[in-house]
Length: 104
Image (cartoon, rainbow, N blue to C red):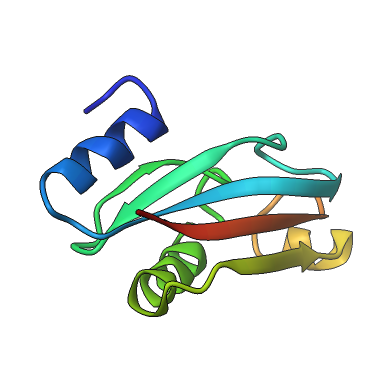
């Protein structure tokens, strides 16, 4: 695997795959990844990087697949209250916004 997400996305594109990149653009409260964190997804379902440490990756990958299909960027918002966080096994609440765009 390449050293960074952009290199991996470029390698997948060079191999003829469709690719989308997701970037954390805003956080409020507690967030496992800082603004600027990225995840690349290809049209075969491969992923590189992380936007949340695993909590929302599958939802982001699902939206990335839609972006690869229609070419439309997406701004995704995820949030959880402190009370809900404990119920699902997370240590704290918070919100994160992720921007997903196709790589041409």
